[in-house]
Figure 1: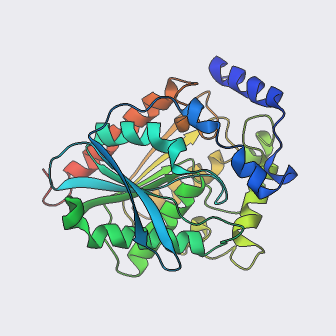
Figure 2: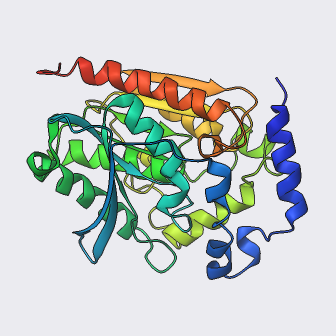
Length: 315
C-alpha cells in the first residue's frame, strides 16, 4: 500500500512550511515550533474530569495530568509517557488521543511531563518516569484506581521509556504491571535497519532526526547497551507485562517495534502487534489529519480492556 492520501497531503503541507529540521536550529526554537501540533491533533472529546498537579520526583517536582473517564472507584489505570525524542513536546499535544483512550478503556490515565534532554539527559527522563509509576502505585487508593490493573505506555521516545520502566519494575520487584502499550517505540540505537534506510527522509520523521534525538538523550555511547536506555539490549525479556505494540508502515522506527515484539514473544511474553498501512510515525496524534488515528486508539482500547478484564480480581 502507498501512503494514505491525507498523509501525503499533510507531508506536502509540512514541507512547504519551511520549518527547520531538529538539527538545524537551537533547541528552544525547535520546541517552540511544536506548538502547532496541538491543532493537528484535533478537538478533545468530553471527559468526566481532567486535573493537573505536581508530584515529587527524584530531582524536581513533576507536572502530571490526570484524565478520569468517570466517577467510578477502583478503575484500571495507565501511566503515560509522551513522545518527542526525549527533547520536545508537551502534554497538550496528546490531550485529544488521551481523552479518547481514557473514555474508551475506562482507565484513569496519568501522563507526566518528565524533564527533557539535552538539559536533562539519561537517566533523568527515565528516572522521572519510573518515579511516576511508583507514585501512582503508592497513591492508588487516593486516585481510586486498582493497583492490580496499572499499565504503562507511551509513543516513540515515550514508548522507549515505558518499555524501560516495565523492565525496571520486573528487575527491582516493583509494581506488577498489567500491560505495556508501546506505540512505534524506538528501543535501540541502530540506524542501519531496513526501515531506517528505506524511510530515511520524506516521511515526517527523518533518520537524521533520530540520530540527533538519541545524541541529546544519551550524549555519547556509554549507555548504548544499558537496557533502561535501549530496552532491546536487555539480556532477559521473560516475565514482563503483556505488550501491545503498534507500528506504522512508513516509519523509520518500524523495525524497532517489529524486533521488540519478537524479543518479547520469544521470551514467552503475551504480545499483540499491529502495523497500520499507509501511516507515518506519530499518526495517533494526527486526529485532525487522518481517521486512522481514531481507529488505532479504538483498537488499543479494545486490547487494554481485554487484558485488564483478565487480571486476577478483575471485573
